[in-house]
Image (cartoon, rainbow, N blue to C red; front, side):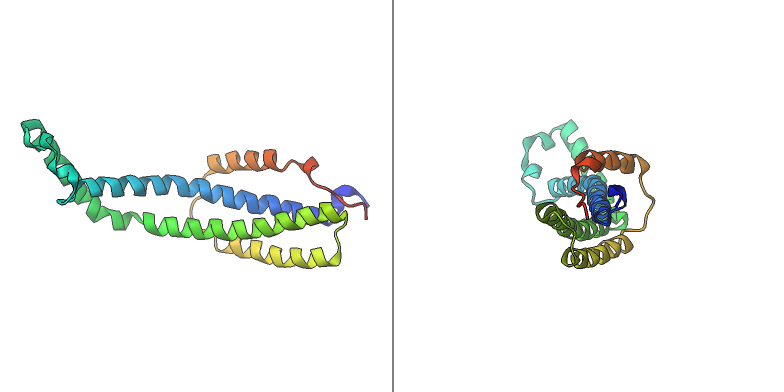
Length: 173
């Protein structure tokens, strides 16, 4: 049998797909988390009970002007924040990453067992079938939005460096 046509390649391709999915959505999640975190910090600074409000610099002419601007900005941010949808996006991305990570873990274990046992037997094929359904489910539940080609290209290169084709064991049978 041609090693490139061996059914174990389905496992390896699925592993790389799952890795791509988890890495991509982590990359998409990170900037949303950062924006949300900075917004939360900004709002925490401006609340009346904040220790920052007691700083003496706010009592100067420039300080009181700066404080008025900061409080005004925070008022707009406070109203706009729910409409930005960051909390929902974070939740969707985290759920997607979790699904991909679970499938990735199972596929990595199958990969390891193929290499250890030097075969791709019916038990491993059955486990792969279950993992494959999990991968398809993760893909179905991905957030539906415009994809980012720059991030996709970067993650694709990362996955190919992490899992080069010659890093997989292909059984002889």
